[in-house]
Image (cartoon, rainbow, N blue to C red):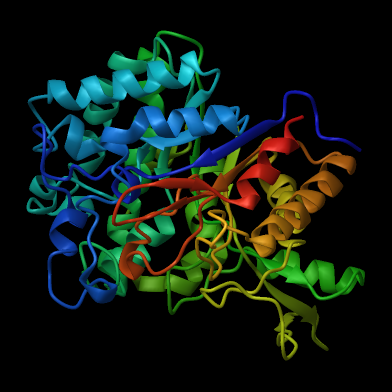
Length: 444
């Protein structure tokens, strides 16, 4: 079954990873601006100070997207650039940048899909406790109000928060991301509850203040298990395991998705986290579970399981020599089929892949091109599984490749390249890769 005519062919970025101009034109400090300048936090001391210089080269980047036939661009409006102190005065130069970027996208026939938060909290708010502060949902709601007031006359597709699992687990539990905290489980779960409340408040703001009909979702990590075979017992085991909560960490789907889509924390998660579960009210859950229009999900890989003798999932080791990317993540295209199946069964919302991509070792060749057949094959194989799911009635509505540009890859700096477009980080020169040329032909 072919892709629907209105299927969304998109690509995605995050502000800190591409914009640069980190200390210019009235932008405030974000937690990543501070974190990257601490010794021994980022690979080889890299920072996002300049990144891809998208702040200055956005017209060039929009032109590349137009050339590639991209129909939608997932972008972030950076909180520290718009409200430097996190609350209070709005930065007119920050608003002006996003005004110009959104207008350029629309003029090129590209639909902006805006994310409100992709990890770079204003440092001024971090100094007030960040997501640990019970006022943080209000802060985020106020930020959303400014953004919706300024841009909802042109933007109709919104995502509130990117990957809550990473924000809390990596940033506040293991400490490998900004702000670099290592909290107790109870503290991290309390911060996570505030983050979910912030999501809900932002959804309410969008619904109340939008100037045009809005489509709203968010973009969590799609953590799940794949069945090792087509045996119904393996499929059942994978389905159950995909929504289990490990008491030792925050890396799961159900704890972060069930409150949003089902209005409750999963009972198995409540039992797993036990005394560390934060206190919450029915009103909290009502705020968190505002109606959403689509199920956005970032998904890159997934482990295989089989049913054990008791029916419970047992991990199946990867075969020697298995396909992997430069991150050592297994390349398993059917993860998108099973993600669509399991998440649609549970949450009953049309699906959008808000991130999917791969990093490989590559370079600019002597012929002036970037030959990346592994990435082209990755895209083709994963989209084949999306097409398979659509053929079975699973309502996939769109696919955003991560990322448009090679960019700052968080604690790994510029070590890994995910882009459809190669970036020379010394000169800023862009070169469309072979995979980008392939991607440009998909819409046709």
